[in-house]
Length: 218
Image (cartoon, rainbow, N blue to C red; front, side, top):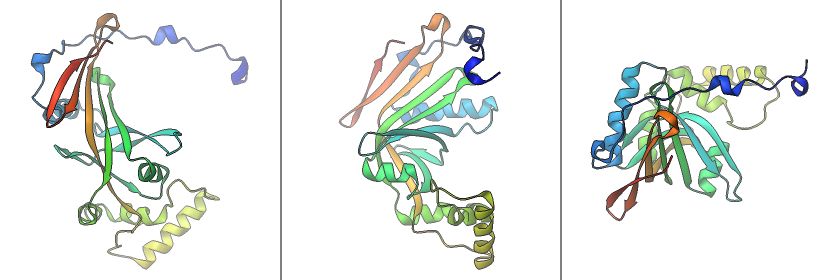
């Protein structure tokens, strides 16, 4: 039976009841980064794989959106940091249109965090410090993969990796086309699942040097 004639999946049977502690304005830290640190620690303690995995949504200058999962590699009051190939689809999007949205989908603990803001490249020395902390294979891989470009085969990728490993058997330099981005938050929403779809949504919104907290309807 092909996909066109297959019966629809039983979406109703996939429904789950969310039960969590209420999230109130009084529960929140004074700023979103401190609140994120608390929830991130909870996600780590929950023990599920890669709690630093986040969906990164970008858009081209022409408004064509795209999203993918990347890994958070640092955060602080200046923003949320990840690394990539600047010539990749996301790298090109962020060069043309330096705005992004992040989503941390911590479904096992019925939480999500959404971050919206502007994006800036990290200073090259900051990117280099992280690059040289990576495993050797990941550093060669950064050179070997022309990220988002069409390749003829897996063998082409593997051959290029081997060639580069032979060229740099110990310390590959950081590519000029590779580095970090920082998402500078303008809004950060904390979502806590509740029964009957009456979820708690509290959003920090930047207002000058301060943060306003607003409750959103679920």
